[in-house]
Length: 102
Image (cartoon, rainbow, N blue to C red):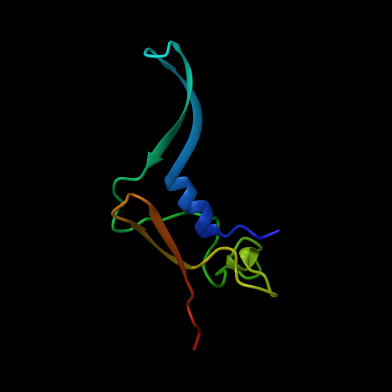
């Protein structure tokens, strides 16, 4: 089982597809169609609240800081930074960025 990344969830949230049945006057029956909801533009800065206070909690040992979303054995599920781009074909690309500490 492949783990689902945060970037994938964000991309699917911005580009939703849903199978529907819609009435067709020509065939006088219900036909299978796919409804697509796609992002047409993005703000220059998109802020997402994930209930974390950054790398370290200012309040001390708080389970709701970034460590809550981190795993010791693999990549963190919640990236600190992401880039989102709408391609020419209207698909959405989400890249998770890794910040290297000094």
